[in-house]
Image (cartoon, rainbow, N blue to C red):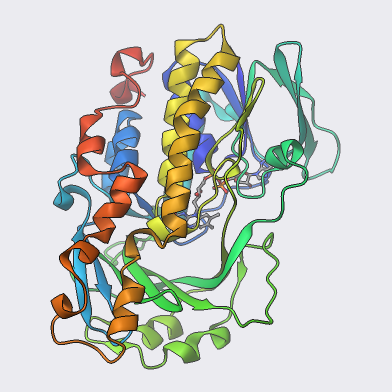
Length: 433
Ligand SMILES: Cc1cc2nc3c(=O)[nH]c(=O)nc-3n(C[C@H](O)[C@H](O)[C@H](O)COP(=O)(O)OP(=O)(O)OC[C@H]3O[C@@H](n4cnc5c(N)ncnc54)[C@H](O)[C@@H]3O)c2cc1C
Protein backbone atom coordinates (compact mmCIF):
# COMPACT_ATOMS: atom_id res chain seq x y z
CA UNK A 1 0.00 0.00 0.00
CA UNK A 2 1.14 3.54 -0.79
CA UNK A 3 -0.23 6.68 0.84
CA UNK A 4 -0.16 10.32 -0.25
CA UNK A 5 -0.52 12.91 2.51
CA UNK A 6 -1.60 16.43 1.64
CA UNK A 7 -0.29 18.97 4.18
CA UNK A 8 2.93 18.92 6.20
CA UNK A 9 1.50 20.34 9.44
CA UNK A 10 1.33 18.52 12.76
CA UNK A 11 -1.37 16.11 11.52
CA UNK A 12 0.26 15.28 8.18
CA UNK A 13 3.78 14.77 9.58
CA UNK A 14 2.57 12.60 12.47
CA UNK A 15 0.65 10.51 9.95
CA UNK A 16 3.86 10.05 7.96
CA UNK A 17 5.85 8.97 11.05
CA UNK A 18 3.06 6.59 12.09
CA UNK A 19 2.79 4.96 8.67
CA UNK A 20 6.56 4.56 8.52
CA UNK A 21 6.49 2.90 11.95
CA UNK A 22 3.92 0.47 10.56
CA UNK A 23 5.89 -0.23 7.38
CA UNK A 24 3.52 1.64 5.02
CA UNK A 25 5.27 3.83 2.40
CA UNK A 26 4.05 7.43 2.12
CA UNK A 27 4.90 10.87 0.75
CA UNK A 28 3.87 14.26 2.15
CA UNK A 29 3.05 17.14 -0.22
CA UNK A 30 3.18 20.52 1.52
CA UNK A 31 2.17 23.82 -0.09
CA UNK A 32 4.73 25.99 1.77
CA UNK A 33 8.06 26.29 -0.03
CA UNK A 34 9.95 26.37 3.24
CA UNK A 35 9.05 25.19 6.75
CA UNK A 36 10.01 27.87 9.23
CA UNK A 37 9.85 27.52 13.03
CA UNK A 38 7.09 30.07 13.29
CA UNK A 39 4.33 30.60 15.79
CA UNK A 40 4.00 30.73 19.52
CA UNK A 41 3.04 27.98 21.95
CA UNK A 42 0.88 24.87 21.98
CA UNK A 43 -0.07 22.38 24.64
CA UNK A 44 0.60 18.70 24.02
CA UNK A 45 -1.90 16.78 26.13
CA UNK A 46 -0.97 13.52 27.95
CA UNK A 47 -2.95 11.31 25.53
CA UNK A 48 -0.95 12.81 22.65
CA UNK A 49 2.39 12.65 24.50
CA UNK A 50 1.77 8.91 25.06
CA UNK A 51 1.60 8.43 21.28
CA UNK A 52 4.60 10.67 20.60
CA UNK A 53 6.66 8.65 23.09
CA UNK A 54 5.66 5.51 21.16
CA UNK A 55 6.95 7.28 18.06
CA UNK A 56 10.38 7.53 19.70
CA UNK A 57 10.19 11.28 20.42
CA UNK A 58 10.43 11.13 24.22
CA UNK A 59 13.98 12.48 24.49
CA UNK A 60 13.32 15.45 22.19
CA UNK A 61 10.06 16.32 23.94
CA UNK A 62 11.61 16.20 27.41
CA UNK A 63 14.49 18.39 26.20
CA UNK A 64 12.39 21.04 24.49
CA UNK A 65 9.05 20.99 26.32
CA UNK A 66 8.07 22.25 29.75
CA UNK A 67 6.05 19.78 31.82
CA UNK A 68 2.77 21.47 32.77
CA UNK A 69 1.75 21.18 36.42
CA UNK A 70 -1.34 23.34 36.78
CA UNK A 71 -3.86 25.65 35.17
CA UNK A 72 -4.64 28.60 37.45
CA UNK A 73 -7.78 30.67 36.90
CA UNK A 74 -7.93 34.30 38.06
CA UNK A 75 -10.64 36.92 37.72
CA UNK A 76 -10.09 40.13 35.77
CA UNK A 77 -9.44 41.76 39.18
CA UNK A 78 -6.62 39.28 39.80
CA UNK A 79 -8.38 37.10 42.37
CA UNK A 80 -7.49 33.44 42.33
CA UNK A 81 -10.51 31.22 41.57
CA UNK A 82 -9.02 27.73 41.45
CA UNK A 83 -6.08 25.75 40.11
CA UNK A 84 -6.64 22.59 38.15
CA UNK A 85 -3.79 20.10 38.16
CA UNK A 86 -2.41 19.07 34.78
CA UNK A 87 -0.38 16.26 33.26
CA UNK A 88 1.50 13.98 35.66
CA UNK A 89 0.39 16.13 38.60
CA UNK A 90 -3.23 15.28 37.72
CA UNK A 91 -2.48 11.55 37.76
CA UNK A 92 -1.90 11.00 34.04
CA UNK A 93 0.81 8.44 33.31
CA UNK A 94 2.30 10.82 30.71
CA UNK A 95 3.22 14.49 31.10
CA UNK A 96 1.53 17.41 29.41
CA UNK A 97 4.04 19.69 27.67
CA UNK A 98 4.00 23.41 26.98
CA UNK A 99 5.85 23.59 23.68
CA UNK A 100 7.07 26.12 21.19
CA UNK A 101 4.92 25.32 18.16
CA UNK A 102 7.77 25.85 15.72
CA UNK A 103 10.15 23.61 17.68
CA UNK A 104 7.58 20.82 17.68
CA UNK A 105 6.71 21.24 14.01
CA UNK A 106 10.37 21.27 12.95
CA UNK A 107 11.05 18.23 15.17
CA UNK A 108 8.39 16.27 13.28
CA UNK A 109 9.63 17.48 9.87
CA UNK A 110 13.25 16.59 10.66
CA UNK A 111 12.24 13.14 11.87
CA UNK A 112 10.23 12.53 8.68
CA UNK A 113 13.25 13.44 6.55
CA UNK A 114 15.66 11.44 8.74
CA UNK A 115 13.51 8.29 8.90
CA UNK A 116 11.72 8.29 5.53
CA UNK A 117 14.29 10.19 3.42
CA UNK A 118 14.22 13.69 1.97
CA UNK A 119 11.98 12.62 -0.94
CA UNK A 120 9.19 11.82 1.50
CA UNK A 121 8.53 15.51 2.26
CA UNK A 122 7.92 17.52 -0.88
CA UNK A 123 7.68 21.24 -0.17
CA UNK A 124 6.20 23.82 -2.53
CA UNK A 125 3.51 21.40 -3.80
CA UNK A 126 -0.04 22.66 -3.50
CA UNK A 127 -2.85 20.17 -3.98
CA UNK A 128 -5.57 21.62 -6.20
CA UNK A 129 -7.86 18.61 -6.57
CA UNK A 130 -8.27 14.92 -5.80
CA UNK A 131 -10.26 12.05 -7.26
CA UNK A 132 -10.93 8.37 -6.71
CA UNK A 133 -9.92 6.40 -9.76
CA UNK A 134 -10.28 2.63 -10.21
CA UNK A 135 -9.53 1.68 -6.59
CA UNK A 136 -6.69 4.22 -6.43
CA UNK A 137 -6.62 7.92 -5.83
CA UNK A 138 -5.12 10.73 -7.88
CA UNK A 139 -4.00 14.13 -6.57
CA UNK A 140 -3.46 17.11 -8.83
CA UNK A 141 -0.63 19.38 -7.68
CA UNK A 142 0.89 22.69 -8.68
CA UNK A 143 4.43 23.86 -8.09
CA UNK A 144 4.27 26.94 -5.84
CA UNK A 145 7.41 28.43 -7.38
CA UNK A 146 6.54 28.19 -11.05
CA UNK A 147 2.76 27.90 -10.83
CA UNK A 148 3.13 24.97 -13.24
CA UNK A 149 1.46 21.60 -13.04
CA UNK A 150 3.47 19.29 -10.72
CA UNK A 151 1.35 16.17 -10.89
CA UNK A 152 -0.67 14.13 -10.99
CA UNK A 153 0.43 11.68 -8.30
CA UNK A 154 -1.35 8.41 -7.69
CA UNK A 155 -1.58 6.21 -4.59
CA UNK A 156 -3.84 3.70 -2.82
CA UNK A 157 -4.92 6.17 -0.15
CA UNK A 158 -4.91 9.95 0.18
CA UNK A 159 -4.95 11.64 3.59
CA UNK A 160 -6.01 15.29 3.48
CA UNK A 161 -4.29 17.03 6.40
CA UNK A 162 -4.44 20.45 4.78
CA UNK A 163 -5.77 22.47 7.69
CA UNK A 164 -8.74 24.66 8.52
CA UNK A 165 -9.05 25.96 4.95
CA UNK A 166 -8.66 22.51 3.40
CA UNK A 167 -8.83 22.34 -0.40
CA UNK A 168 -9.87 18.69 -0.26
CA UNK A 169 -12.68 19.35 2.22
CA UNK A 170 -13.91 22.21 -0.01
CA UNK A 171 -13.98 19.86 -2.99
CA UNK A 172 -16.32 17.46 -1.14
CA UNK A 173 -18.33 20.26 0.49
CA UNK A 174 -18.39 23.03 -2.14
CA UNK A 175 -21.29 24.85 -0.47
CA UNK A 176 -19.82 24.94 3.02
CA UNK A 177 -19.73 28.40 4.55
CA UNK A 178 -16.43 30.01 5.69
CA UNK A 179 -15.21 29.04 9.18
CA UNK A 180 -17.58 30.11 11.95
CA UNK A 181 -16.18 33.08 13.90
CA UNK A 182 -17.41 33.52 17.50
CA UNK A 183 -16.41 37.24 17.32
CA UNK A 184 -13.42 36.78 19.59
CA UNK A 185 -10.11 38.17 18.37
CA UNK A 186 -6.90 36.69 19.81
CA UNK A 187 -3.60 38.57 19.81
CA UNK A 188 -0.71 36.25 20.49
CA UNK A 189 2.93 36.89 21.25
CA UNK A 190 6.06 35.68 23.00
CA UNK A 191 8.06 37.76 25.46
CA UNK A 192 11.57 36.95 26.71
CA UNK A 193 12.98 37.23 30.25
CA UNK A 194 9.75 36.68 32.14
CA UNK A 195 9.18 33.99 34.72
CA UNK A 196 5.60 33.52 35.84
CA UNK A 197 4.68 31.66 39.05
CA UNK A 198 6.56 28.32 39.22
CA UNK A 199 7.29 28.28 35.46
CA UNK A 200 5.05 25.22 34.98
CA UNK A 201 1.62 26.78 35.48
CA UNK A 202 -0.67 28.02 32.75
CA UNK A 203 -2.77 31.02 33.68
CA UNK A 204 -6.22 32.09 32.45
CA UNK A 205 -7.25 35.53 33.69
CA UNK A 206 -10.67 37.01 32.95
CA UNK A 207 -13.46 35.45 31.01
CA UNK A 208 -15.28 35.31 27.71
CA UNK A 209 -15.35 39.10 26.99
CA UNK A 210 -11.77 39.80 27.96
CA UNK A 211 -9.08 37.29 28.75
CA UNK A 212 -5.32 36.91 29.19
CA UNK A 213 -3.82 33.42 28.83
CA UNK A 214 -0.13 32.64 29.37
CA UNK A 215 2.39 29.86 29.91
CA UNK A 216 6.14 29.43 29.62
CA UNK A 217 7.78 27.81 26.62
CA UNK A 218 11.41 27.19 25.70
CA UNK A 219 13.18 29.07 22.96
CA UNK A 220 13.86 26.95 19.83
CA UNK A 221 17.33 25.34 20.22
CA UNK A 222 18.65 27.09 17.08
CA UNK A 223 17.87 30.54 18.56
CA UNK A 224 19.48 29.93 21.95
CA UNK A 225 22.73 31.59 22.99
CA UNK A 226 25.09 29.59 25.22
CA UNK A 227 24.33 30.12 28.91
CA UNK A 228 21.20 32.14 28.14
CA UNK A 229 17.93 31.60 30.01
CA UNK A 230 15.78 29.89 27.38
CA UNK A 231 12.40 30.51 29.02
CA UNK A 232 9.91 32.74 27.25
CA UNK A 233 6.32 33.64 28.05
CA UNK A 234 3.75 32.61 25.47
CA UNK A 235 0.69 34.86 25.85
CA UNK A 236 -2.71 35.53 24.33
CA UNK A 237 -4.97 38.56 24.83
CA UNK A 238 -8.60 38.09 23.81
CA UNK A 239 -11.38 40.62 23.25
CA UNK A 240 -14.82 40.50 21.68
CA UNK A 241 -14.79 42.39 18.38
CA UNK A 242 -16.87 45.55 17.97
CA UNK A 243 -20.32 44.94 16.43
CA UNK A 244 -19.44 46.58 13.12
CA UNK A 245 -16.13 44.78 12.65
CA UNK A 246 -15.76 42.24 9.85
CA UNK A 247 -12.92 39.73 9.86
CA UNK A 248 -11.63 37.91 6.84
CA UNK A 249 -11.73 34.47 8.42
CA UNK A 250 -9.57 32.99 5.72
CA UNK A 251 -6.78 35.38 6.71
CA UNK A 252 -6.19 33.83 10.08
CA UNK A 253 -2.49 34.25 10.60
CA UNK A 254 -1.51 37.88 10.26
CA UNK A 255 0.58 40.44 12.11
CA UNK A 256 -1.28 42.37 14.76
CA UNK A 257 -0.73 45.66 16.54
CA UNK A 258 -0.71 46.41 20.28
CA UNK A 259 -2.63 49.62 19.45
CA UNK A 260 -5.73 47.48 18.87
CA UNK A 261 -5.91 45.91 22.35
CA UNK A 262 -3.18 46.99 24.82
CA UNK A 263 -5.21 49.88 26.21
CA UNK A 264 -7.94 47.47 27.37
CA UNK A 265 -5.37 45.62 29.50
CA UNK A 266 -3.64 48.71 30.97
CA UNK A 267 -4.80 47.94 34.55
CA UNK A 268 -4.02 44.24 34.43
CA UNK A 269 -0.98 44.47 36.70
CA UNK A 270 -0.96 41.60 39.20
CA UNK A 271 1.62 40.24 41.65
CA UNK A 272 2.24 37.26 39.36
CA UNK A 273 2.21 39.08 35.99
CA UNK A 274 2.33 42.61 34.62
CA UNK A 275 0.31 42.31 31.40
CA UNK A 276 1.12 45.80 29.96
CA UNK A 277 4.84 45.04 30.46
CA UNK A 278 4.48 41.65 28.74
CA UNK A 279 2.78 43.29 25.75
CA UNK A 280 5.21 46.21 25.50
CA UNK A 281 8.28 43.92 25.44
CA UNK A 282 6.94 41.29 23.06
CA UNK A 283 8.96 40.04 20.09
CA UNK A 284 5.98 40.24 17.71
CA UNK A 285 2.20 40.06 17.66
CA UNK A 286 -0.06 37.81 15.57
CA UNK A 287 -3.78 38.29 15.28
CA UNK A 288 -6.34 35.50 14.76
CA UNK A 289 -10.09 35.29 14.73
CA UNK A 290 -11.26 32.42 16.97
CA UNK A 291 -12.91 30.05 14.51
CA UNK A 292 -14.22 26.54 14.13
CA UNK A 293 -16.50 24.76 11.66
CA UNK A 294 -19.70 22.78 12.04
CA UNK A 295 -19.27 18.99 12.21
CA UNK A 296 -19.33 17.12 8.90
CA UNK A 297 -21.60 14.16 8.12
CA UNK A 298 -18.75 12.31 6.40
CA UNK A 299 -14.92 12.40 6.57
CA UNK A 300 -14.00 9.65 4.12
CA UNK A 301 -14.79 9.42 0.42
CA UNK A 302 -13.64 6.16 -1.18
CA UNK A 303 -9.88 6.04 -0.67
CA UNK A 304 -9.67 9.63 0.58
CA UNK A 305 -9.86 10.72 4.24
CA UNK A 306 -9.83 14.07 6.03
CA UNK A 307 -7.64 14.38 9.14
CA UNK A 308 -6.79 17.02 11.79
CA UNK A 309 -8.09 20.54 11.26
CA UNK A 310 -9.26 19.62 7.75
CA UNK A 311 -11.78 17.28 9.40
CA UNK A 312 -12.54 19.05 12.70
CA UNK A 313 -11.14 22.56 13.25
CA UNK A 314 -11.74 23.71 16.83
CA UNK A 315 -11.37 26.91 18.77
CA UNK A 316 -8.27 26.62 20.99
CA UNK A 317 -10.40 26.73 24.17
CA UNK A 318 -9.44 23.24 25.37
CA UNK A 319 -5.81 23.56 24.11
CA UNK A 320 -6.15 20.28 22.26
CA UNK A 321 -6.36 20.90 18.48
CA UNK A 322 -2.83 19.71 17.76
CA UNK A 323 -3.07 16.77 20.19
CA UNK A 324 -6.27 15.54 18.56
CA UNK A 325 -4.63 15.64 15.12
CA UNK A 326 -1.93 13.32 16.52
CA UNK A 327 -4.61 10.90 17.75
CA UNK A 328 -6.28 10.97 14.31
CA UNK A 329 -2.95 10.02 12.75
CA UNK A 330 -2.45 7.10 15.12
CA UNK A 331 -5.96 5.70 14.66
CA UNK A 332 -5.79 6.07 10.89
CA UNK A 333 -2.41 4.31 10.77
CA UNK A 334 -3.63 1.49 13.01
CA UNK A 335 -6.67 0.86 10.79
CA UNK A 336 -4.69 0.94 7.53
CA UNK A 337 -2.15 -1.52 8.96
CA UNK A 338 -4.99 -3.81 10.10
CA UNK A 339 -6.64 -3.99 6.65
CA UNK A 340 -3.99 -3.21 4.01
CA UNK A 341 -5.98 -4.92 1.25
CA UNK A 342 -9.17 -3.03 2.15
CA UNK A 343 -8.24 0.64 2.43
CA UNK A 344 -11.85 1.82 2.14
CA UNK A 345 -12.90 -0.37 5.07
CA UNK A 346 -9.91 0.88 7.05
CA UNK A 347 -10.80 4.52 6.42
CA UNK A 348 -14.41 3.89 7.43
CA UNK A 349 -13.22 2.32 10.70
CA UNK A 350 -11.03 5.40 11.33
CA UNK A 351 -14.00 7.69 10.70
CA UNK A 352 -16.34 5.61 12.87
CA UNK A 353 -14.01 6.07 15.84
CA UNK A 354 -12.88 9.65 15.38
CA UNK A 355 -15.84 11.59 13.95
CA UNK A 356 -18.29 11.08 16.87
CA UNK A 357 -15.46 11.70 19.35
CA UNK A 358 -14.61 15.02 17.67
CA UNK A 359 -18.27 16.08 17.63
CA UNK A 360 -18.24 15.76 21.41
CA UNK A 361 -15.11 17.89 21.74
CA UNK A 362 -16.58 20.52 19.40
CA UNK A 363 -19.77 20.58 21.51
CA UNK A 364 -17.72 20.88 24.71
CA UNK A 365 -15.65 23.74 23.30
CA UNK A 366 -18.70 25.61 22.05
CA UNK A 367 -20.21 25.29 25.54
CA UNK A 368 -17.22 27.20 26.95
CA UNK A 369 -14.70 24.38 27.28
CA UNK A 370 -13.04 23.62 30.60
CA UNK A 371 -13.34 27.25 31.75
CA UNK A 372 -17.09 27.42 31.53
CA UNK A 373 -17.37 28.48 35.22
CA UNK A 374 -15.49 31.76 34.73
CA UNK A 375 -18.47 33.76 33.34
CA UNK A 376 -20.44 32.66 36.43
CA UNK A 377 -17.81 34.16 38.74
CA UNK A 378 -17.84 37.45 36.81
CA UNK A 379 -21.61 37.59 36.82
CA UNK A 380 -22.08 36.72 40.52
CA UNK A 381 -19.14 38.62 41.99
CA UNK A 382 -18.33 41.52 39.63
CA UNK A 383 -16.55 43.40 42.44
CA UNK A 384 -14.67 40.39 43.82
CA UNK A 385 -15.27 37.90 46.63
CA UNK A 386 -13.95 36.94 50.08
CA UNK A 387 -14.30 33.20 49.58
CA UNK A 388 -14.79 31.50 46.19
CA UNK A 389 -17.07 28.95 47.90
CA UNK A 390 -19.61 31.79 48.37
CA UNK A 391 -19.66 32.21 44.59
CA UNK A 392 -19.39 28.70 43.13
CA UNK A 393 -20.76 25.40 44.36
CA UNK A 394 -18.50 22.34 44.56
CA UNK A 395 -20.19 21.00 41.45
CA UNK A 396 -19.62 24.21 39.49
CA UNK A 397 -15.97 24.24 40.53
CA UNK A 398 -15.68 20.78 39.03
CA UNK A 399 -16.79 21.85 35.58
CA UNK A 400 -13.27 21.46 34.23
CA UNK A 401 -13.45 17.78 35.16
CA UNK A 402 -16.87 17.68 33.45
CA UNK A 403 -15.24 18.83 30.20
CA UNK A 404 -12.84 15.91 30.42
CA UNK A 405 -15.74 13.51 30.83
CA UNK A 406 -17.61 15.07 27.88
CA UNK A 407 -14.57 14.87 25.68
CA UNK A 408 -13.53 11.39 26.85
CA UNK A 409 -10.16 12.60 28.06
CA UNK A 410 -10.28 11.63 31.74
CA UNK A 411 -7.28 10.24 33.62
CA UNK A 412 -8.86 6.80 33.82
CA UNK A 413 -9.62 6.59 30.11
CA UNK A 414 -6.24 7.94 29.05
CA UNK A 415 -4.26 5.75 31.48
CA UNK A 416 -6.44 2.76 30.60
CA UNK A 417 -5.06 2.78 27.04
CA UNK A 418 -1.30 2.12 26.95
CA UNK A 419 -1.00 2.79 23.20
CA UNK A 420 -3.47 3.43 20.38
CA UNK A 421 -1.43 1.02 18.27
CA UNK A 422 -0.36 -2.28 19.85
CA UNK A 423 3.47 -2.02 19.99
CA UNK A 424 3.77 -5.57 18.59
CA UNK A 425 2.45 -4.12 15.31
CA UNK A 426 5.35 -1.68 15.04
CA UNK A 427 7.62 -2.61 12.14
CA UNK A 428 10.11 0.03 13.27
CA UNK A 429 10.56 0.09 17.05
CA UNK A 430 10.66 3.55 18.72
CA UNK A 431 14.18 3.13 20.11
CA UNK A 432 15.59 2.17 16.70
CA UNK A 433 13.71 4.86 14.71
C1 LIG B 1 -0.16 29.36 13.82
C2 LIG B 1 -1.08 28.42 14.56
C3 LIG B 1 -1.21 28.47 15.96
C4 LIG B 1 -2.03 27.57 16.66
N1 LIG B 1 -2.11 27.58 18.03
C5 LIG B 1 -2.81 26.60 18.70
C6 LIG B 1 -2.84 26.49 20.11
O1 LIG B 1 -2.27 27.31 20.81
N2 LIG B 1 -3.53 25.47 20.70
C7 LIG B 1 -4.17 24.51 19.94
O2 LIG B 1 -4.76 23.56 20.48
N3 LIG B 1 -4.20 24.63 18.63
C8 LIG B 1 -3.53 25.64 17.99
N4 LIG B 1 -3.53 25.72 16.66
C9 LIG B 1 -4.29 24.75 16.00
C10 LIG B 1 -3.49 23.50 15.99
O3 LIG B 1 -2.14 23.82 15.77
C11 LIG B 1 -4.12 22.68 14.94
O4 LIG B 1 -5.28 22.07 15.49
C12 LIG B 1 -3.17 21.64 14.44
O5 LIG B 1 -2.01 22.29 13.97
C13 LIG B 1 -3.84 20.84 13.38
O6 LIG B 1 -2.86 20.33 12.56
P1 LIG B 1 -3.14 20.07 11.04
O7 LIG B 1 -1.92 19.40 10.57
O8 LIG B 1 -4.44 19.43 10.89
O9 LIG B 1 -3.30 21.52 10.37
P2 LIG B 1 -2.23 22.65 10.13
O10 LIG B 1 -1.28 22.71 11.27
O11 LIG B 1 -2.98 23.88 9.80
O12 LIG B 1 -1.41 22.16 8.87
C14 LIG B 1 -1.96 22.14 7.57
C15 LIG B 1 -0.82 22.13 6.57
O13 LIG B 1 -1.33 21.93 5.28
C16 LIG B 1 -0.72 22.83 4.37
N5 LIG B 1 -1.65 23.02 3.26
C17 LIG B 1 -2.79 23.76 3.26
N6 LIG B 1 -3.41 23.67 2.07
C18 LIG B 1 -2.64 22.85 1.30
C19 LIG B 1 -2.77 22.35 -0.04
N7 LIG B 1 -3.82 22.68 -0.81
N8 LIG B 1 -1.80 21.53 -0.52
C20 LIG B 1 -0.73 21.18 0.26
N9 LIG B 1 -0.58 21.63 1.54
C21 LIG B 1 -1.52 22.44 2.05
C22 LIG B 1 -0.45 24.06 5.20
O14 LIG B 1 0.56 24.85 4.64
C23 LIG B 1 -0.07 23.45 6.54
O15 LIG B 1 1.31 23.21 6.63
C24 LIG B 1 -2.76 26.63 15.93
C25 LIG B 1 -2.67 26.60 14.52
C26 LIG B 1 -1.83 27.48 13.84
C27 LIG B 1 -1.71 27.41 12.32
